Amino acid sequence: MTEIYELIFEIGLMHYLIVSGSVFGLGTAIALGKRSAIAVLMGIELMLNGSILALLAFSRFPQNTSGDAGLVDGHVFVVFILSVAAAEAAVALALSVLVYRKRETVDLDRINLMRW
Image (tube, rainbow, N blue to C red):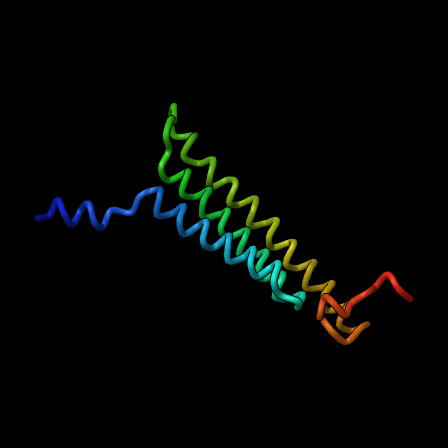
């Protein structure tokens, strides 16, 4: 009986990849479907989080590793992606605030900064 419970409750690589793909797909739908700059930024952040989850899943379930160095690679990539995502969020939010001060909207269809 305990063997059945172990088979049912064992979370494998496929489960992580399904959740990762779902989060990435949701982020893509939000980034492409919304008109607000803030919502587009939130969609991009979801896409980054989906890729982070996939990297962590691949580092959690290694296929061929010749030592302990293979287990750390995914975590190193995650640190780099998180630092880039934090910098991207800070710059994008600062630009959104500047655009809002100038144009008084964050609707991407109404913002046309190339015109005087």
